[in-house]
Image (cartoon, rainbow, N blue to C red; front, side):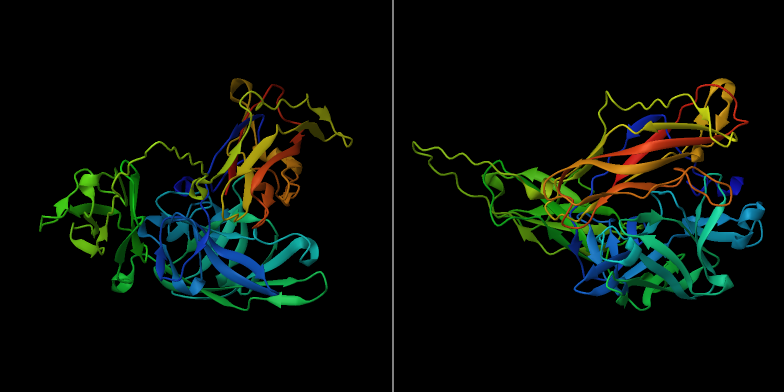
Length: 489
């Protein structure tokens, strides 16, 4: 299955005796109405919302900071040419086409050079829908080829979620507070329209539905050059005091793949714009001084041939005159709401999990051991209170003496909330049983440890889980270890 190696995560395995915490900062959510093309980075492409009695589908775009929530009609998802790969000579993946044929695949595990779309129900509250779940459907696919969304079990085998070439609609049940990703495979270059729909039954028996919602995908290069890009500069305040830090940001509308900028300034008494040396990124920071008062700044975006693709309108810096402080003093303390973040962590002195020696189970056909995950702390200081989801995954086998291994898929967990702040609404993730042939399971795939819906996540919560290891009796004796990775978004 060597041809699948490029798509990282196609054969991810599970579990952990040693726990290492991962950290991801998540910006405050906003809304956006401009047309965009998303081609790299994380996005919850199918983001399910419920408000005022109506179910809707949105796009949660994490490719920009702060993150924004978009209407699917305003988004084109691009599968870049670099996503091309050969179908492996493995009969389990024959549904993708003949071995050696080409498909374009957005992988289950994030590749920074490609788009990483998923689906999300973390904004949905518990107790609103029957069985705390919604039904997500792929209703129709229009395009030059076939589309398949699939995850994988602990042994790399495919678990198909949606598949267009054997009849649609395809339906999956998605619990609330779920954030999930899959492999997205396209069999041909060109433009596609995927119609997704979410349905649910309220606890009072009322049914709600989004109806079919169009999602536009382009596999390969954009035709017609895509929408024209405009550029603006944000971040300039009305006035600064001397020695304040000024941070300007170049903002593309719509967002494109171009990322080469130059900044220029023009101060009173000069007619020409001067390039600012060493500044080639989307952000430019400097210190305000009286000498810079009334200076203007512009940003320019450049194409691959170094031609100017877009130029911003000028913004002007105004620096206040120093005032005589006299004999008074002013002391100001503030907390900048834009500096809030989402952090997941473990105590560095309490991150090792040692499971008790395995014992034969009641049936005599499995080695069993139960233990406890060390406490995991999630702290959310973001002013927008967008909610969060904390997940865990073990990306490698347990390793033991003399190179012996066993699949991390044999480890499962039962999450629980150990503590939470006043006003928080943190809920534990669903139980994940150890791997069973034909049913899957285990922590080889990302599993939710805990989550908080929008408006109920700000503060500090502590999560835990009971761990359960269940192994075949033929597993070689010895001490085995692996690593569990934790993330929060």
